[in-house]
View 1 (cartoon, one colour):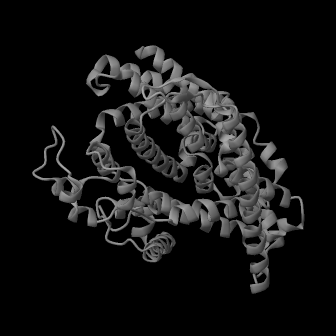
View 2 (spheres, rainbow, N blue to C red):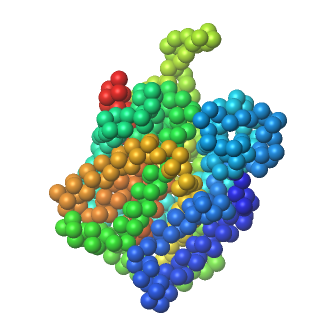
View 3 (cartoon, one colour):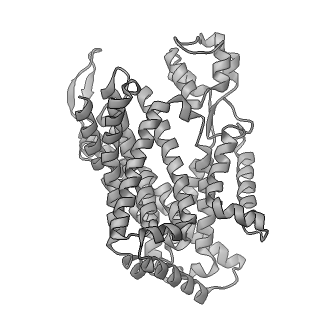
Length: 492
């Protein structure tokens, strides 16, 4: 239900105080704090403390149902469903998560518009992902060293494709294990579960656009899709937490992998040397110029996305054909040529926002604008990234794990296959853990979080995460379709 704080101004204040406290304590000289941050990286806390403030403390949330819902239980005619172990509807609503309440209201026949009227949400993630993220991409890419990026070599691409393959084969393997050892998890309609898991594959290889494409292609019911969203978000976020921790012990992991990190160290040192050579004390004027460049690019990227995405949506709509008639006598249409050919990403405004802001940042790096690094462009980009991390943490509800423990088991086993394959290939080709982490997150998390993980290693490496995430958008639907067809074949 409703969190203690619903005003975004208050929540933003809480998040920034949390971030400030983390960075302050992580730089203290006392032995206690040094030991603590040796095992718990600061970036991980930036992510998990907001999650804990969401659940179990209930202080903040990304979305919720208004408490007025409790006052209108009788008016809406709500009643407990068969098998629900609660004394009353009120006791259920007070302890249920957002997706559980949404599903409960739908099962009680409450109209969609009525359900919507009780919903509340925070817009902080939207602001961070649509305004601060593209600005950070520009600021982190503006001083990019193309030669050093090129010198990272083929191992980065190999690890990215390995991450994709791990997701493609991990889903069917996890489903096979569930079929043979825990058949009750799949229930009476294993095909519906397989179709639902295809949306997780779409998200973990590409992103939200690819996920929705899978929902359309395999006609996944909203009820199943809602559960899969929870599995997707929670499992992916838990894995991101491990990656952030791994970034803090990357030297130990690289020694185990016997990895050659010279190209990565060269990139980091070149960026550091360049920054030192142009460093200057920022002035009000220079900071305004930097922010003007960053948010001017954000505005230009939004403008381009607003023009390009609708064009492709219209193209896809125009390509739909009638494939049949439903029971009500209404025409059933195909998904459209772009969706059917795995190009759903290009209909997403967020896809073009990321592509355009990254492109503008890369182009600016070829101009005198690259000297903005001298007044801290990448540091500002990192600040925006950390704010984004905190808002992502707000979305995580650890309590939802127990509500769908069987499907979470499939998701976790799926992720373990993905991770095992990554580490195996990295060991064979002696790839640095950075390539493992960013290759994985570029698939599983996409453009919103790949630069976050890359920045955990070094802000100078953030552009690598962005570029690989864009590649993930490109192949996401194709990989998800292959994964889905294997799972459908297994249960069919």
